[in-house]
Image (cartoon, rainbow over all chains, first blue to last red; front, side, top):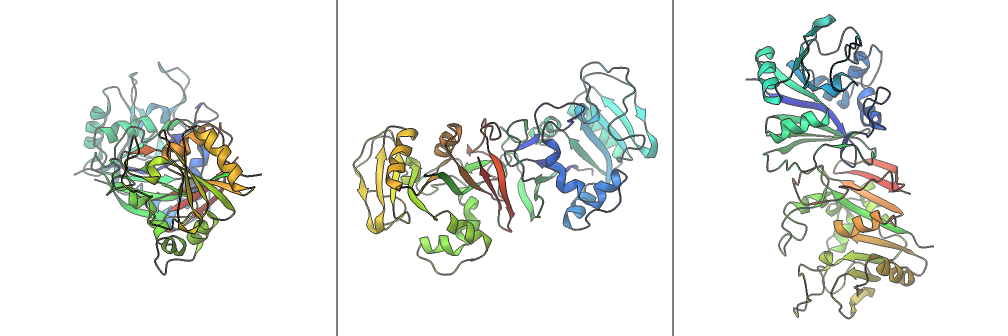
Length: 213
Length: 213
């Protein structure tokens, strides 16, 4: 049976999963890139962006794990594009170039319908207007018994957490302050939702924890 | 000139500095003791509670630093007693026995006046009804050019942070989930208040960060 998993999702010391004032220049909000320094140092992430080298230790293993046995992804629209509202006719095909690193169906939550977009390398973006449950249903069918990864952003993860649908969540706490932005856990009682911390890895660049139900 | 410092203050992964349902049995709220496991493993904390042994590494050094050049403390009433409202005639003299580890004047924020309480070993508890600024003024006079430590709890630290009065803050992020309780940073924009992260130590039992202005 497919499980719903979150991996490599980073928050700041003050709990924000993205900084304020997201834009084309700052897709993760002001200061938000600092959340992912640990990830961009790994071989797995560097390879995704066509770069050589990178670390191969525990943090790279965590990055690798995030792709293991994943048959479909779910992401919020803001992870796909900086545009908002009706889809503009701007030829935008995501942040990742012609061959996105997903290499499987990706279900994009949006209020605005749009035909699927097939990319090189096996990634097809499907635009889902029916909400998180519909997206999960379609992703589960597409995943064909493999797992589904919720990529983010904060609002999408919060919805799946609050609905009690996330089975496993790997969180990285990065040693940065964001001050304001999108708070991942505000008002969410993880214990009440049945989560327990199952792993804790104090790495030099970030502290990693895994929650499971 | 005296500086106002916070040391060894622990929060959970989800940002809580104390658990829910504080009581005599659970002075730090349900699950709150888990925040301080890293501290209770150190030689410095064990010694405070009359125990031998304990770790002497980086986390013990952080504990030692919290007592260095401190001439006065400020704490919230709930750190002194489990009682609330008018002071009961119950002979309560704090959680620490006859010889508390402060060994200097301690200013306790409360709405209810009470005469000072002199203890063995140099600690005197002064009960301040004039609010955080009055407590800081009195603590500064008492500290005689040494620094002042804000011991906690969450509400007290939040008030001093929001007033921009904390000069340095050492925070420990413990790998526990509390789910609910008293959130340390909710609604507080540390960057806007002028804080920057000046240190980051990934220790096995907790992740330590220091903020300074």
